[in-house]
Length: 210
Figure 1 (cartoon, rainbow, N blue to C red):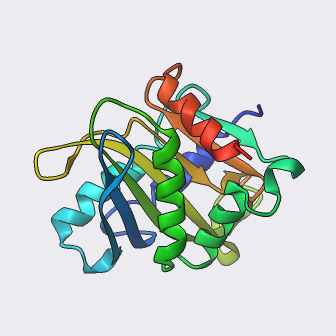
Figure 2: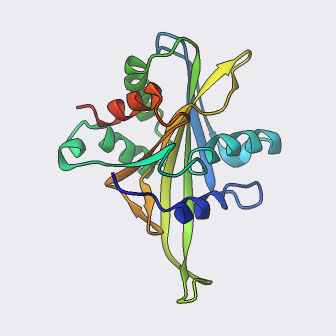
């Protein structure tokens, strides 16, 4: 595993506020203890109330803002992991469609729910974001010109209670990885709230399973 640059993650999280929001869509599913879907949602992020936006920004931001290289670690999708029908291919398609394809999301929920096991209900939250990465001068000051548009997904797995009230994310990921201020589709940053928790290991196994 290679190291994640903390500054890259902080640069992303600065675009995860109500005033500087980089997200355009949120989708997800509520899952029961056996991994079956209780319900799904798919909304334009800006159509949420300010309160709802803030709650969901906090969920999304928890992934890149976590303890870099302890809770958040980088993994590589090798050629064998990127074959037809792979999870990598599905994530690429979800990124490209901006989470607007419910059928593809259902495939992810079904695959995830069949392998992820905890003793309580939980929710899968997906966020699609776009970040217009500014060029930086030699003195590291930002310039107006854009270097590239980084399109990405954040997935957060949260326990839920009551009327689907989410708790803090237990695990999740950022895809593609944001490396050296650029998109790297061959890498993914996987989050574990407890850096050694088995839930995070299961996420890794799900994402890289063939």
